[in-house]
Image (cartoon, rainbow, N blue to C red; front, top):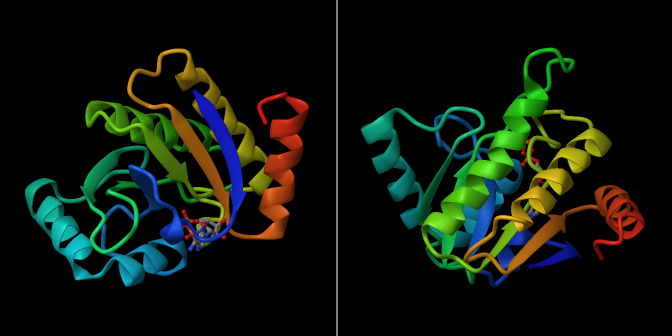
Amino acid sequence: MNIQLIKGDITKIKVDAIVNAANSRLAGGGGVDGAIHKAGGPSIMKACDFIRKQTGGCPAGEAVITTAGKLPAKKVIHTVGPVWRGGNFNEPVLLRNAYENSLKMAEKHGLESIAFPNISTGVYGYPLGAAADIAINAVIQHSDQASSIKLIIFVCFDTLSFDIYNKKLTSMGVI
Ligand code: ADP
């Protein structure tokens, strides 16, 4: 399994699935969520509306899958990270679950490539370095049990997060 790091816009990436840092009502919003719905068109929200009607939404740590509409990716896996409330409200477990359940969802659908944004580190306020450690550990641990997934890409939108990931992944010998 190959792990890569890219600096850029996740809506431009041609993989089997891009992951959306959604909210639990799957209602769209700003940040990466807004960018994905804007670039992918209304069919993604239509699919989210359907899931919301069936299940009420997506709790923190869980993941659901929809069409990717007009995006170059084939699917969008919507996961919900925790809102950072100081670190004593189960945030690390919920963030790890968000990565793990996204990977499991991709495996369930036989997908081979998946791209992640830095879940929870925007509006949800999770400290970048701590979130990167969780993201990287979850992905590395999954690589031992991966079946369909062959490529995982971390997509950093800004230089600061790219530099943090780059340092960590390089020092671990992952990239
Ligand atoms: P959350 O609510 O989970 O914090 P945000 O969308 O506010 O989600 O931020 C999550 C991360 O996504 C941030 O690091 C932000 O810089 C990044 N981001 C925003 N837009 C994009 C995009 N188009 N592609 C990739 N990452 C993005």
